[in-house]
Length: 395
Image (cartoon, rainbow, N blue to C red):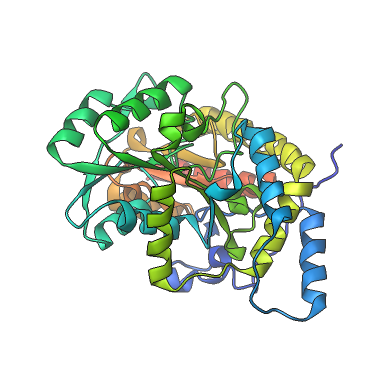
């Protein structure tokens, strides 16, 4: 029996929670079960709560920064869990990774330059690229033998033909759940070096890795990769504190770091939320056991979903994840795609998942399900799906 009870159902309604309190604003009926936005329905480690209470009790919330202790906590976590010895001067704190990627697009490219992503991928990538007047270049992932992979040949061709200057990597990949191997990352890094393409590596899900797989920080593979890469990390996904808005961006290359800082200064967003810094440091210092128990629980959730899909949901396939707590479900053999799938999920199954189309090319016929919730919530969701499938077959 572990220290933490992840089976506990915590009512999040009435807390201004995007997942539960803004259904009408998103055009959803109140009856849907929301398993979409990527935060978890688990309470944070007790030490994090205690640190926030202590900070709040002080009663003064003026301009704040963090000292050596914050960096040391971050450094120790990265070194212990990811075998990467980050340096203090590399660190630039950001209110969020999407914000940081937008700043990187502005800092490392010019209007009209090509910026490469790998659809189907986290949809804000596309938004910040196009919103800043850059050319979106989609090196779509390939589906082979039940697994997604990179098309390196096409990648080189697109880089040459589309004047790509920046590559935005999702590692581990959201939503398809790939944890890229050392070999894949090495080949990607070499191609980008050869053509002078800088890399932004979004590694926010790096602490959610299933047994048999290993997350490797791209910048930790080779010194030349480190000098060509901006790595985006945060305690937000790992410890479920996304609302506190703090991210740790590592940029070893001094000129890249200065260009990034200059773009941040233009926005006026120079201060980081004090509570985010307090919670982040506490989580990195005291959250190890919580995370270890959480990973075991999530593995149990994955096993439960896999068995249920295989045995009781004909026409639906689970794309086996190697990391993250987000599941990529393939509905294409059920005959549900496009608007029909979205309508069926909401109106017939009573579920609010992420429509696969929002992740770009290759997403039609898929949906993303967040399994970062108590098992009973998953049981309810899959039961609704099974009942809706049965009713569809009878019709």
